[in-house]
Length: 375
Image (tube, rainbow, N blue to C red; front, side, top):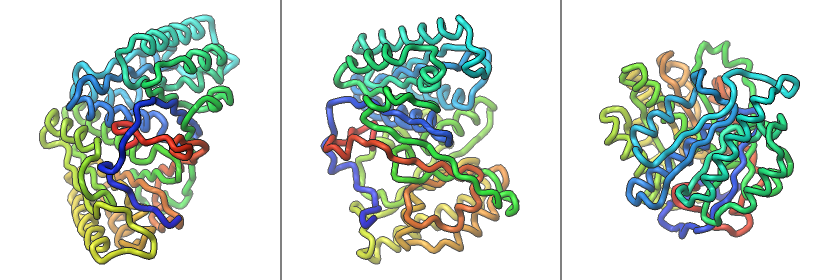
């Protein structure tokens, strides 16, 4: 892997045709990735309300229970009024294929009727079908019906399908298929540290999962009337033009003194074997900020976006990172993202490690990336 850096958004033309995304697998990050795409899309919509309106349709998530992403969705709806709609369907308890009921099938069909209406309405630029994959796996909806309807979606519409057990028929029509594969680090508990999450791999969903995770942190703090501060530190992302900037700025306006955002790096790809002195300087500058933030206890959630490739390119040494993570306050959660060829030593400290495995990506077929969805 020679090209491991992150190209600035300014050079990307974008695309007009919407794609079908499938996030599945046993690892963490599926719904978070969907929320990250929502955040990016809504950030774009703050500048142009016609550009992004989102429907978040959640299957198998009855209203009687609280879910991990509820706080994130509440933060989104408060920060982006009139740009996001949410619909829930299903029972509020876990069940398997042997314990489905007529009510479960009715609720699944009700949800799919909402989805079809949303796709036909022309009101939305993004429709998230959260947990549609297990709905199909449980046979609560006919897969052929869902596949047929998705094939006839409006050309511009982005559709994001999440959950374990995506059926082959859905994967076949998907333009992107990213599997979240879990990795266990049994020695993590021996180090006496918790609250470290790592999202890596060649598939899509790493930074978007981190964005979704930051939303959850903000929403959790708001729901508990706490000052749950978040730092988003990004490496290898110099320059301007990233749509998460607009989203983060909007969150900062909506929630003053909650979100801090720092970026370092050149406005160019960093090639392995062709690192420049400025790359080392910028990487170290970013780490000094991150290290101070981790030690301070001021932040409850710290996103270290693209730290993995920064270390993999030898722009930062591993040992100071390990020591900082070992000494972090217990109530500070650290989320680390980015692909890498050689997993660094701090991976052994992770309580959550989800590898995004790329099975299919539309970029491999010459399809342009889209502002607000891919970057």
